[in-house]
Length: 125
Image 1 (cartoon, helix red, strand yellow):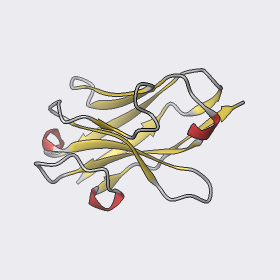
Image 2 (cartoon, helix red, strand yellow):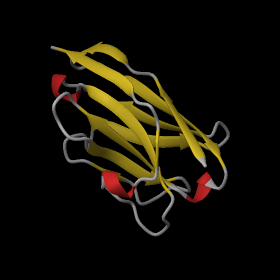
Image 3 (cartoon, helix red, strand yellow):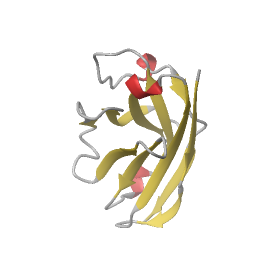
C-alpha cells in the first residue's frame, strides 16, 4: 500500500507561483510513476504532469508545458509540482497519484492506482 499526502495549495494572483508537495510512504514506491492531476469544478480530472520516481520519461500537459515542473526529493520521499506564471484557468483541486505499473508514463486517470486527498489551488485574475 502507498499513501500520498499533498500540501502547498492556496490562493495566488495571476502570474504568481506555488509549489505543491506530495509526501509518499509505503512499500516499493521507488519503482512507481508519480503523476499530478487536477480537477476544476464541473470538469473531469485531467493530467498535468508525470515522471518516473527514478527520473526520466517526464511528461507534461500542453497547457502547463514551460510553466510547471515536476521533481522529487529522494531523501524526503516527496514529489513536487512547481507552478509558475499561474493563470486563472489553473484553478482546480490538484491531486498526486502513483502508478505501480512499470514501463509506462501514463496520462490516464484510470491507470493510476493510488491517490492523495487533493489540495486546492485558486488563481485570481
